[in-house]
Image 1 (cartoon, one colour):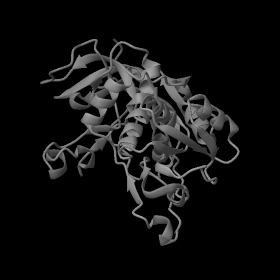
Image 2 (cartoon, rainbow, N blue to C red):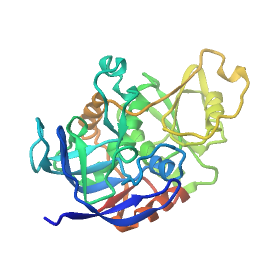
Image 3 (cartoon, rainbow, N blue to C red):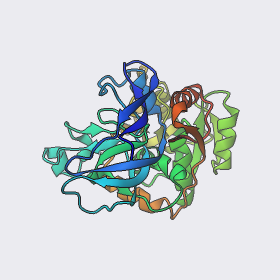
Length: 330
């Protein structure tokens, strides 16, 4: 094996990705090294390179929906074997000692580290990961699997906070929404899809995935929603969603970053409506969703890019030129 690898690197924040040759990483205690087969792109990657998330490791290899085969084991690794295919999500390390970790809320760990943000990620030929956060994913298509590691996992955690809601509004019909719409349909729920005004392609896509109503984010649904899931990073969707949900309904914000939420009258919140956010994920989320996805089965719609085109992929995501999920293939 050569001792260097190709990677796309963020050297300044804000900045753009540049191609670099880096030493192939060596896994430390409790870590595995992965030969990357695919890595999904995510709007969170844009928040990192745009400095909307303000504390990245620099220089940084982004990418946090990593799928590949284990090709080296660090000391003390148990439970994974050489050659086994794994997926690595956004949450990449937790302390295991704080009150959050001890109570099953490891996603809120104050010392948590994140793949592709405070840890190097998957926009490279190799990556290392904490064995605790490397999920076995089976021998399926790596490209199709990659979006499940964030769009799927965070989307699923967002849906869980909707409880048993039957009428589900989804704001922002991108990678997460196209996965969760399939889960909702499988569960017998009704999906109401909200897109950017004038985005007919996204509206058609949502209809093809079973949405019973499609419209713009500034429109009202034909009937009150039981819950609204917000994947668009636009703060103005929060008051709009509150107006769309029934009394007792919940608005769940699924993104890690959102523009400021404009003021709204208390009447929009009154009636025991609630707003809540989703932060990261837990290993339990990963295990539960990755077992569920093949039962649905979730079919991801993907556009692939070579490693050297990672910045172009992010530009396409920013411009709304992607349908479904983008995936980098080294």
